Image: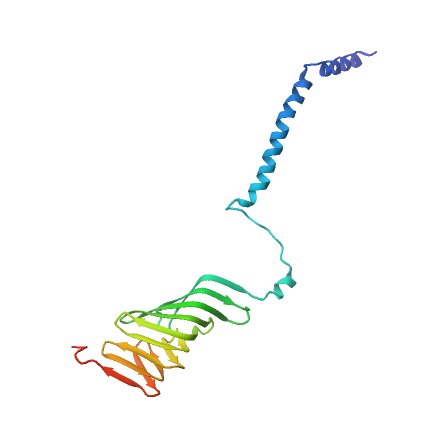
Length: 212
């Protein structure tokens, strides 16, 4: 037998000897391997519960074309400017846009804030349709207007031009102003100049001494 074969046979006998390095390695693996498996399983179980996780997915193009809704948003906000560069903000509790081809947003829980010459004004309504291309709001049902200088108005089924700060109703109106109160079958109003045109049996009640 050659010298190299003798050395290789001695190494193998030493490796197989009881209590040698091979036995110590097996004993370590028997303990460490189950622990490692447990850690991996725990990670796979609890990883989806992490708050900061990234999810990747593929979306078929034909599925996008059949989507019933383009966008539904909770607590949406739209910002713009009027014809004189004054800002306005339109808030919605819920906003839904059916299609990117139609710039109409269905709004539930609407409020709009406008900066006027004598202070801010606020519009509130339950339901509305917002035309994003024209900056116009069509209110469905009642709407309330309040201004910082004492103007109050309640009407329904109103078209609001946010850029022009104009408002026109299709229903009856009741309101208050520093001079007194007014009512009518319908109205057209310029919110910037506080000009109100009433039609349909308009009534005006002036409180004497209200303005001195």
